[in-house]
Image (cartoon, rainbow, N blue to C red; front, side, top):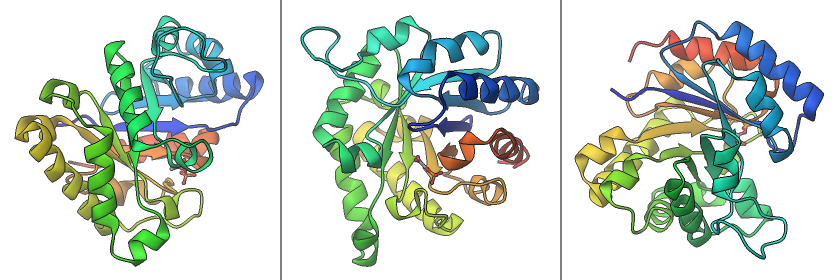
Length: 255
Ligand code: PEP
């Protein structure tokens, strides 16, 4: 059985004081959770301080981006070994905001995934269609292409180590959540693609998160779907109460 994973993507929010306050509240209130993996993804500059607060907790640390080279003349970039060195375990790759504003492509996502895996980081690989693509019935074509190109060349063992986050772009930060049925049909489709790419065993091992306006009151419905293995949470991960409730409500779902 796949262990669910709930990750908070803080985006460009929370300086040191807010970050410490938030993770202190999470650490205190989620200490008894042992059936889901919990991850927080702060900005680079507070990763180390958040890591220290999270020592001896059940909450892991993730970054929001990574560069594919390990070191060299790449001004402004941060590499996988540097993240690993300060205790980062997960990294979000190919978020739609990076695709939209920073020129991320399926090809750069593929290079970043390989770098993350080389250094033992768990990639959280984001895919998802924009509204026009959904309305033009192109969702499955878009998802197929993103999965095939982002995960190109990975063998079954490498494939298994990824988390895929299905995030319909029209649902991110908009308050519009995909219905659990809409999400499940895409998750099931992704699992089928993974089976073609790496075999059934690998596809059954990969955790597929849903992301897009996840809130305490919609997480249980989403998590009750057979192919939804957790959530990537943006806005609601900035509020301790909401994120705590999302984690707790997801634990309450029998899968
Ligand atoms: C996200 O940015 O990954 C996200 C899902 O955001 P929100 O939960 O705010 O829609």
